[in-house]
Amino acid sequence: MTWLIWALLSAFFAGLTAILAEIGVQDINSNPATGKIPNVVSGISIRS
Image (cartoon, rainbow, N blue to C red; front, side, top):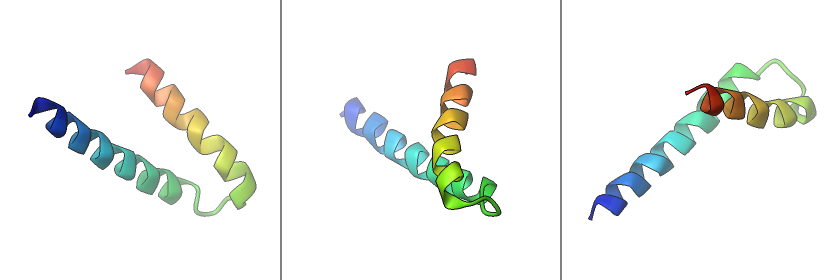
């Protein structure tokens, strides 16, 4: 049963990451923004 909790938390945080990334790059052209979002998320993940 604990795997279900971890799966739900993972899905929640993935959605939250996508929302926050889109908010952060609202004023940037979509092509460069698409490339920058994974870099930022990876950088945050590595530092944690």
